[in-house]
Length: 480
Image (cartoon, rainbow, N blue to C red; front, side, top):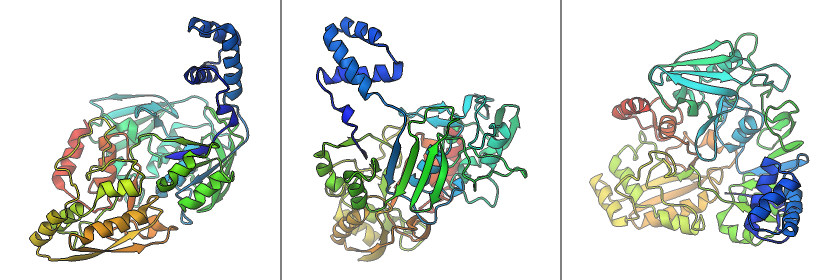
């Protein structure tokens, strides 16, 4: 959920609100003249006078280029770098990919993959070979024309034995990668009908190729709507409009701040210090809703909050203990008390219901302390004590959610010691380092993409260290 300060022109001055919204979209997107719009409105049953009023209001409210856009995000760390192989959260995804860079593809608001730096793409040989033809004339921020060699260098940056990139496991399926004129060709080890989606991952912006064939990530030079002016890891990033961008850049300047504390983010918005925040504290959402200067944007996404257990570390190496932990958490209580009723119990399913081919696994793990007790007994335990490391860096409300988990688990004979970790460096020092933590996943628009990224045996993002040979076989088989 995101909030932004309203433009005063967004308030309808009269007439039907829905028709005014249609007018705004038509004028801004289709660029209708007054004459064309009046004709349209009269045909829709309006008077000419009303149509002229609506046109004037909508034209005034249409987006205009210019100004400075100030953003505060609930992610970011002093350990962040411009190297996309190190991106861990929304902050560098927003800065290094969404603002500074572009990938070959992008997925739209409906979850469908679309060309980005690629002009088109085509699969062949039962989806085992993919060719991406580049847009003509696209330039990097330094004026250099983007070539297929640049794309090859950018993808290879995440491949190889020494790579620690989060997307290394996704790219393991590539058998051969080459530049062919203005086209980049991928030969896969096996067919993958969803492969174009993979290349829209925020870790895969296209960067200039250096003389030795490596990718130049240190300069921050990319192809995006904005170019780097100043970068202070964990604090702020200042950017200015790229005058040669192939798409549309609305602002002259963009500043992205890292403000991990949700109360501080909210205060920055309501005081006018920033124009936009993400990860709204849902406990205080009702107060934001009463602020006439704030607009709240709520959409259904792929993200989910988790308390993952490392299955190789005791006591979580016992499946009965893990199942006991699942029955010891009251998911609905967390949704009601921490998330303000916004959200649905995930039932240990990482695939959002809006994703194609999503299923709802059974049985549903509802809160059942007696079931949890019986599972502990099956594991040979009468009680259990574990540490749970949490931070607001994981998700807004993570500490409160952990405390509720602590209370509900106590009724099952499970003692959870909630360890409050530092926000800064949480993803580097706690996540993947400690056996039981709070975590957050952005989710992905395809089943294969997320399962490969988060659960494949060779993925360095596999936060539970789960390895199942048959699962990995089915993962490869399912792609084609």
